[in-house]
Length: 487
Ligand SMILES: [Zn+2]
Image (cartoon, rainbow, N blue to C red; front, side, top):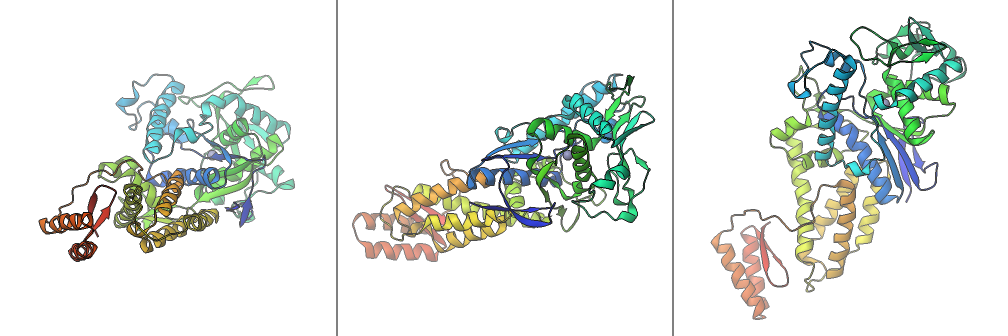
């Protein structure tokens, strides 16, 4: 089945097929592990999770999915510095070795991050690799060397910079994000990992050692340029080392288009001589209650804070997956309540199918294959999850389980198992016993109806069913018993 994806590189919906037959190599920019992940971060990881599942389940590809861990970066160094108020006792004692302190802080938050993504349904077994930047220092320095050899890198004050003026003479810069050439500042050097669009200039590949900062040796032309990598070069080196270039899909949040991804494209092509990725796919921002999430507005939430408020991680997963990844998603507590109900509606339908699977008495034959094709067609259209779910709801609303023929129920159950390999928010075990207050009147009618059915007095059974319905309940029959549910 043909998948169409919006490719930021070409600014269009493009049919996707992998470079190597049947295997999709996908790289996702992972977290900078200096704090707990917030729900905006979660969206950036749920998007590639959804994508890799559609590629596997619907398209039938093998997916080699890599997500890196940035464990050396400005903010990690800031928060692991001796005396930083961000240092937590759980990270252990600080030492006088900056490398060790940065590692302790990063490892602590890496563990928390991996726990968080597993809570929200992103499974470890779906990753090909989760590389850490500090395990790839020699690959990073090798790439810096290559860039210098090709004439696109130069040294200044012990740091190495990417020569953007030289690069722009023959190559494009600004493929993912329109760069206003008036903003280009020739010969100006930027040391920070993050910078704004009006600061387009030579960016740092390798940063000279500063007192109190982690550092590694870097032999260059007989000199030791002790220092540490810039953020952007880490992804270039890890993508090349774990997947080979060019790979098929690179994902990240829209905020990473510039400078992170622009710089990654330039560095990799300068050093390795090939393009990075055929597709660049970006998820949009998440807002909370209609505004940008920020600590000062008081609408900044980590996943664990939401769980402490009693929200269900799978409701959060389902809510985020219910919006198309490349539209701004507005997270609201009210909205989450209704998506929780929507998730439960499908869950109840699945339980109803399971509970009545051995019952052969019902009537209507429905085409599960047609539903499957329609739902998957929406997913293949740039992962249009809202439309896919709309189709599911339209179907279950017009086809209550109690009216379906046995084969149809079996086929539908198979379809929901497949759908759950993508959404991963429903259960297929036995229905948990939930406490519903059933009035004595209703259970009395239900008993009478069951007896009437055994006596083959169908007129009386039907009469009882009507009475039960009038009181706001419904009956689901299985072979040897029945269940009373609220309508
Ligand atoms: Zn990255």
